[in-house]
Length: 180
Image (cartoon, rainbow, N blue to C red; front, side):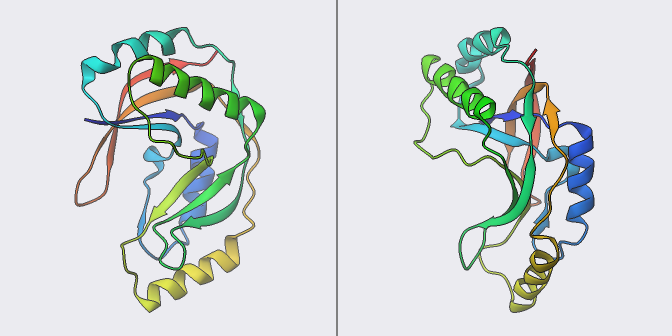
């Protein structure tokens, strides 16, 4: 199964993000219930290979993590693959992310070497977008690129399963862990 570790977002943040998504008229908008901040992508793993990681995560208690989301950006250059809102790389968030990566490696799971870019994905785009969709996306960004949401606190993280479908990924929590 495909798995990842994500910081859970409080309802007030997901509701505000869902409202902001209403103007996106290109690609596939991420459903409100699937909005999250990925801490680490594990890729394909066996469920039993997660046992040691789950034990470590059950003991993790860094306290609530402050999330400050502001500014829209895209990944993928001229042919964007996704639209996201940046999340401030606060020391507590960076510490939690590094700590979870250490736990994952200690559990014997391999992680790709990627720079952590804290963000919440709002929409995904096909490999090639029409000129009309590019224009719609440009208008949306011109109107909303300076989006800034009030800071919130996350008090849990989840080990998630990701199932790919033709309609987009489906996320199911395997287990959720309190941070305090």
